[in-house]
Image (tube, rainbow, N blue to C red; front, side, top):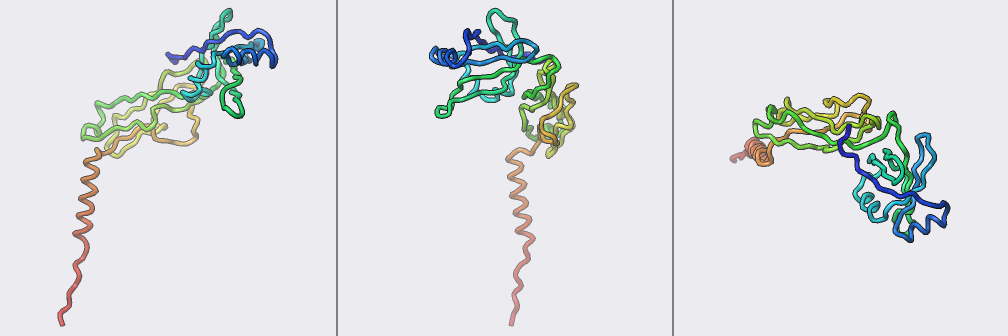
Length: 215
């Protein structure tokens, strides 16, 4: 289970309709709603500045939150819609959906690397590049992995480890429906440049000399 699910604090919004929503915005809040989970929808208000910070951090709609509302049990939610001002592009309303343990959602999961000490490519001076520090997976809300692990213990210089080499948690699958590179081991830039130079020298040596004909 994921170890760090960020909290999202909200207040119960008293009153409904456009009037209550406008009053919330005047008070520096963003109105919203929490729905789903066989429970009545809950109108809420969120602090404008805190919400804006999370939106600007990115991947807001692909992040699982622990919604904390005073007087209510904490509940896991995911954003389903952010309405914005047509001119200022600032949030004016947010919709959240409560999640059941069996709900399937898309989340970015952190990638960890194993096998670096055994990797023959690294022992020969190669450099490991983690191409995808995170991978977007379809996961079950009740069984979200903290990370996935890519093993590079068998990689030589020039080899790559793809998503097909990663053992994914049961019930999870990549959002991208094709094989893609997670990590790779490449030659050091200095060695690569030296190889290129040597290749140019060889190519130059192989150019035939111009034949000179004597009269």
